[in-house]
Image 1: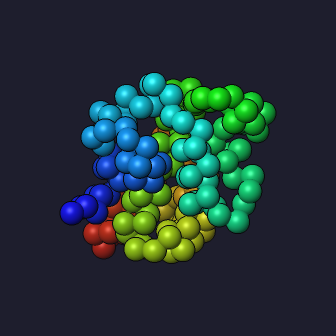
Image 2 (image 1 turned 135 degrees about the horizontal axis):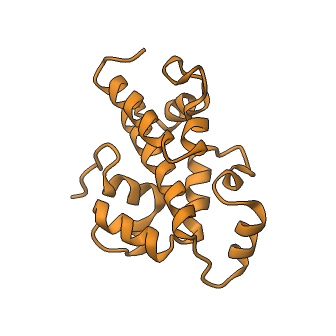
Length: 151
């Protein structure tokens, strides 16, 4: 019986990015890090982009530059660099947490795309994509929302 992944666990990130179906083995934080270092498959970008912004065909280019992503898609086994992979995983962690807190993809998307008072009235998605410091900030807001201490 499959257990539901917890907030932002390695299993939750692997589920969002499709690792479990791709046969990447046990999904722990360490295995996610190892996969980032080895190079995430391009399919991870497409999968995450279609989950977070299904109506925005260009959203993936927020994660990897357009020319780079198109070139890697054309390669037989195109993979992300560790830096690109870290950005994808950062957003995947937040997406997994938002789904856990809000319970539906639509509500999670609404949260990510709507300005939030605890984030200087900026959309959480912008904060996450801006730098590596943004993910933990948004995760903290989601944690407060889950446990009843955020607006």
